[in-house]
Image (cartoon, rainbow, N blue to C red; front, side):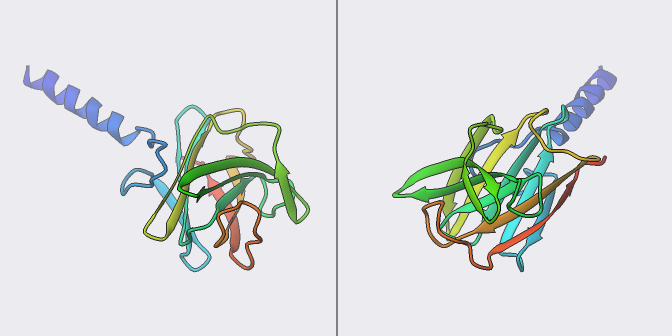
Length: 170
């Protein structure tokens, strides 16, 4: 009986270690396996592969305006952009496509769940992209992040942007 209980506890612990983040607009401590801080720690990208080829991301920035992350490119052009803000007390989420130094509403949806929140001067955009929609090249996803002080999804981000690569290698 003791051995069965030990095996059960070990299975529960391993399941907890592999559990997917909850898409609730919050990047809770310990919720994500990995994170990248950018733009002098003003913006953080949290990410967790889901084990079947998808990815859950949360992007937080020190702003009461919009926050965005574009996947598939380290520049805006060609990136599939996920943006969000809280405007007039209501969460706003949009998927955009980068074109040159601009972006427009995407006709294709990648995220199968999303949430946006704002608390303590920080805006968080959280979402999940399933396998097949994630722009992975050699187990890596290029990205660009940006944020603005305005809650309208159109105000220019000034110098509040950065980019990088998410490595999905085990």
